[in-house]
Length: 264
Image (cartoon, rainbow, N blue to C red; front, top):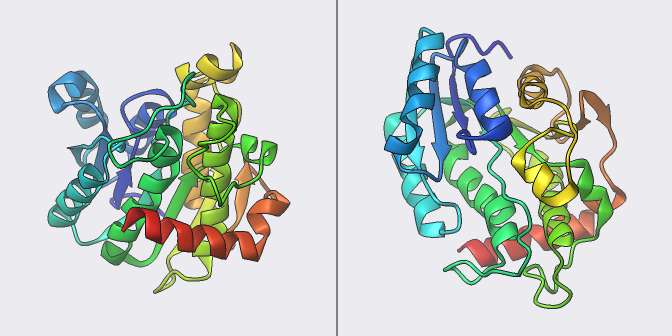
């Protein structure tokens, strides 16, 4: 897909990989709509930078994904701004917190922000996508570290921050594979691991190291452009099979049914 002049929606765009991706995509997009949890005045410098690097427009949508009401409000705001989304990039994410926290919606914070909000956001925005559009869901190779606890997605039993994060990423990859066979009008979806990237999220959970955020941004752009089948999983630039759990059709259907119930 040629993204020059296209409308791109990018979540988690105010820090880390998301901010680097926003800087990269702003050079080409005709309209870039970026989401973050902060009030607009707190990201004014970033928005000025994005507006200076390209010839298109840059718009900001504030939404805290710990609230489904915020997700719905922000999605409606995007739809009011444009009914022709070419690319939807779901990058918003948080690390597993040291202690288990519940959102105002009653869900474990990591699974809601990283996965449930992504699924709800996508469901609301897919009708506004153009024929042949592309969805990129940012997962992680950590999705191979765990199994889906469909009977305890909120990890009321045996909570661990790494497990919470890995499960949220497994849910993203599993959902992406399930969604691929159900998208209308030639819209495609890919899930990616952008690589091991040096961000505050990585450092808070796994220590130091990692490639620059710009590396992850390039992987996101490549996934938008990649000529691959819908449902593909791309790990640091290479198309590989996702984990057996993510590819299990029973798990996919179970997750889809559970997600619809939890986000309704």
